[in-house]
Image 1 (cartoon, helix red, strand yellow):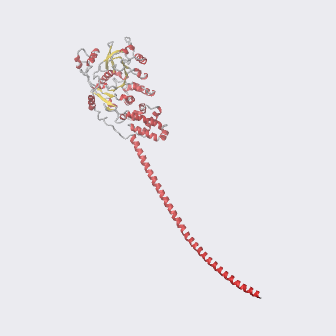
Image 2 (tube, rainbow, N blue to C red):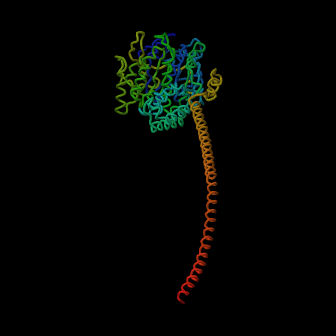
Length: 534
């Protein structure tokens, strides 16, 4: 049937199908490692693709790349797959019907495109700092509330001054600008401290070392490139995450960003006959580990509202308790593989998982969860009225695509043949915040140099003017004193001349006096002598 995906047959002989018109009610695939989660994810992806629904899935272990290749009778698990196909009624006892068009189980590949944040195992996946936004970026850098506030100020400032934040050097340049102008910016946007800016810069450095600098660039990923249909089959986009998973914050933040972009860009379509796209979120616990309450609320809101955009989200995790109750309650389609109960915490998880299913009188769900074999699962999906079916112990159908990873040669061939290989091959570096701030800095430095040169020239001119004035004053002073000196000389000469004549006159007078005195004494003696003689 084209309106549903066949999942398998339960122990009561009931076929379990996922209705396409209710597939956007989200779902959960849970179970311990090695219990068959990847195969379940694979057969769901095949079902959606055959129904013309594009799929995006993160490939944490590399096994999902096998979707790009058809299964083969030479595969080591061929006999087991055949036995399972017969057991659930896909084929009869004739093994040759496996390759027959009339058979219910045939090997085939899905139209696949590979993506990789690091650009080595697929087309590069990129976005910009602006598209990521301050909230997700703060989570990615593990910032506290104060630092997130400053990051928000940075985004507001960039928007107000029409500066694009495309890559990490843009954000780093903007943070340096904020630090250098924190007093002015604090008055307009709120308090900014150098210590908080420095802490954000350190977080950026750690992010860069984790390889995020390759993620934040252009050309950014276009959602329409994930939503193509080829020959009636939905395109399967596989994100190579075997290396990315070593940076769990980057992995989970990227997937959350992609969900947010789908939520913001896709139009409302109500309840379609089939999803517009299905999104598988493997290792979902990484999304919620240490997530602040505000972020969990954001995820809950996206999960609740994105259904009307025609997007189905399927969380894949080991334990249902990894998902917050507010989100878990929105997952209507559930496939629970085996859980192990070795600790009190694991026993509690089993009880919680068992109680989340609609009870089956023929099953003790709590006991069955620990008894499920590989490839078996407890399945409860929504019926036509949107009510969860009674849970059934179900043998999951085998995949039509290869069980196991594609080889490097096969992967490279698909990448090379992709219509998108040239679109995302090379990065772009258009004018953005970094270039604008660099231009401002250069202009300011040039203006400062010119101002300094002008000030220096003005200082030199002022000094020269002052020197000339000083020299002029000295000349004027000298010219004024020179006549006085000559007059004074004349006066001194006159005084000297007068003094000499005075000396001569005095000496002459003295001689005259002496002569007169001598003559007078002679006359006097002559008179006195005559008198004496008388």
